[in-house]
Length: 117
Image (tube, rainbow, N blue to C red):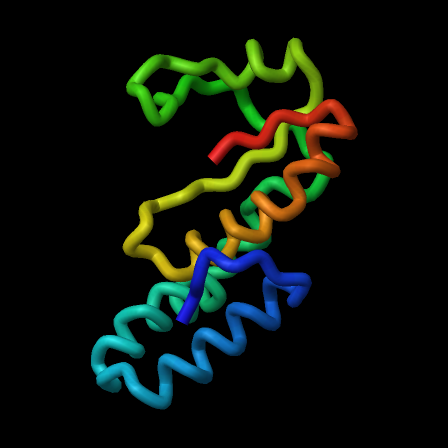
């Protein structure tokens, strides 16, 4: 299961290991509930409609963890923005991804980027 321990293991490998480990102890219906949405997105071709690396996202406003409004264009005035959508601590995939971003944070900051989750 995912922990808060830093790791040098690539994110995809961590996800693959999580799925394999979960398959050994999670009830089949719960494992299916975790994997089904991924399959649906792949089948629907969602990746072909997503922004590609380096593409400019449309401007929007979101709430920060304190509930204050943050506008993407204002963040971009300060430099590059790396954005990930974190659904919550209940999402094991989001947790793994956020941990990987946390590990990369020194490099992101050194490049002048802001991390938004």
